[in-house]
Amino acid sequence: MFIADFHIHSRYSRATSKEMDVEHLVQWARWKGIKLLGTGDWTHHLWLEELKAKLEPLNNGLFIYKGIYFILSTEVSNIYFKYGKTRRVHNLIFAPSFKVVDKINSVLSTYGDLSVDGRPVLSLDCQEMVRIILDICADCFIVPAHAWTPWFGIFGSQTGFDKIEECFDKQTPNIYALETGLSSDPAMNWRWSALDRFALISNSDAHSPVRLGREANAFDCELDYYAILKALKQRDKRRFLFTIEFFPQEGKYHFDGHRSCSICFSPQQTREHNNLCPKCGRPLTVGVMNRVEQLADRPENFQPEQAIPFKSLIPLEEIIAEAYGVGKETRGVQRDYLSFVQNLGNEFEILLTIPEQILRRRLPERVSEGIIRVREGKVDIRPGYDGEYGKITIFPKEKEEGRQMSLF
Image (cartoon, rainbow, N blue to C red; front, side):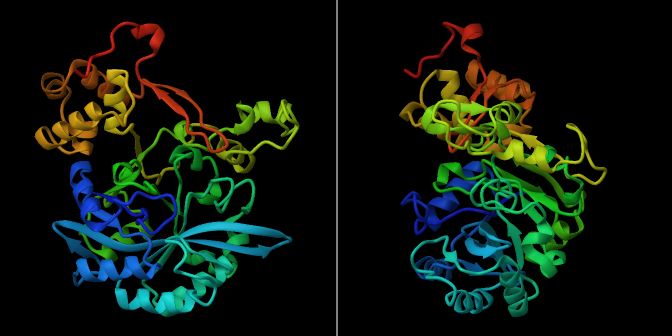
């Protein structure tokens, strides 16, 4: 089995860490337990030069650097006018070689300035982009990114569509996977039968190395571009094992709301207020849960027969931070995180597979208890809304008063 995180960014994307370079990505992938990383941002000429200089091509569509495998992936922002409305849709593009990437970049550069940002803006209809890319190489594949995000998801409330066919038209049969995004999980997507034929993938969309793997995918197939492609196309449960998910409530667009007025509403509350903020009277940002309910034709907890399973996790550094009662950026949290992943096992082994008795023997009591609670789904969550991340609580304060550990 291996873990893959297909969607990340380089330091050439806006609001990204300077440490989003190949060396730091590889180091953090090891600590996290990720075997295959998307490169991100190959539309940007400087990042592409770095990738070409450092990654060793294999004969199977993948690349390698110091034991970590890479797949050529990038995100683009398609902004165009269709059906009487400006559409803003983010898409992931995967390619099997630098030669193919060069050809794609040559064409895409006529629709936008690729040098401005690692995630370029293209004045290009999504269906036309798919046609162009597949004409260049039939082994490329395109995946709508964070499909439900209000502003840039294919089904987003602000600039998206109500059907995938409205977006991709005749190219719809060439779309066979969707990225669920941080604010939704597969169970939410299972409620809409129109999505049954798509593989649902999950990725970190990381802008800093520590965020790698906050969502990811588990495979049991060859580390081979074409084998992964086949597993996704066929939704093969023997080879595409499960996805690793945020608790979707933690995503920053799960519920509806108006951040500047500190208003966070469930879909029902939004309907009761006619989609308007009760404080300022302006329209609320309609989030992912609301959009799912608008389009769903199945009840909650419905699971299609061929559905790929998923596991909801909280990043290890967040568990450590709450166990200690401090911020996750604290030096002590970072110190202990590195100690745990270097001496006990990588992060995914700690969160998923190391037996409970070993965790309790080798880790501080509150940290091991936190990991077990997350495995069992015993968490309290305050949903995110309108760009504000939700808040996950593993140790409710009213029950755990006075039990915080000391870092020192």
